[in-house]
Amino acid sequence: MPQGAGVSGRLYQLLSLEAAKEARFHAGYLFWRYYSLVDSEPMTVPQTFSDGWKGVEEAIAMKSGVWNTALSCLLISHKLALRRQFHHDTEWGFDAASAREYLVLSPYKFTLKEFGASQRDVLQTLGFRLGSATPGAYMDELWRALPTLSRMDGSERELIQDEAWEILRKALQCRKVLRFPLSVLTGAALVEAVVRVLAQNGQYDTFARRDRALDMRRGASLRKAASKVSREVRLGIQESLKISKQDLSRCQRRLGMLRAK
Image (cartoon, rainbow, N blue to C red; front, side, top):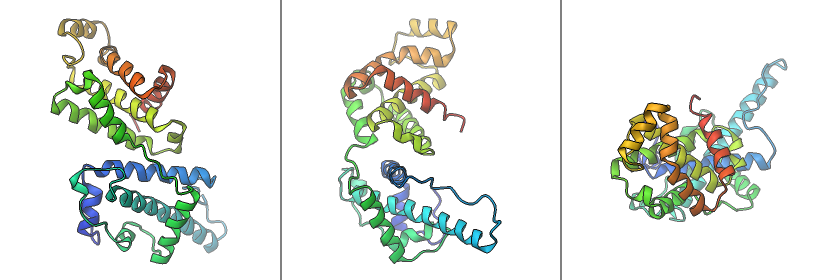
């Protein structure tokens, strides 16, 4: 992300580091958990302003509240990351940006007192249960545990990892993401990422003998071929994460629907 006017160097680092992908995901996940518990749609605002300025003020207040909650979740997630509850990478070895620095990210103005109250509201609503497992932790476990993944070279791993995080980022666009446990969501994102990368590159050497892969390419689409040769990855993920084929497939289908969005 470009460093915008008013965004401090420390906050810019927090938002830009590769390791920040996990903190941003966790912030988004906390955001949807919060709104599922308060039983409200965060972007529900008046469609018309028939009440005159009262309607305008209500719309602004609602949007401002959403931004306040979103930035509260981001700050909470960064604090957890910097305490190394989630991350052990040396990239995170610097002081957290002050709360005041987060306020410049919002198009709406609210005070530090309001920002602090929002953070307390988020924590209390969630019962201070912020979660311990994260997609990054599950992915690290799978890369180590599955021979099919662990024998990949660095460039293949980077492509698949980046694609998996992009899939997870898109999943956060809707709170239906909460329908799936994080283990299922991460496993499905990784399977889908493997399929997409293989289909895009048309290279199956890591997963199958070249002659078999080429035969499949002649008789089916690249995606179908990629799905077939990545079957070992799917089975390994099901076994390692103790999730059913049905749950993994249903979640992957949901994530696949987000491709064009």
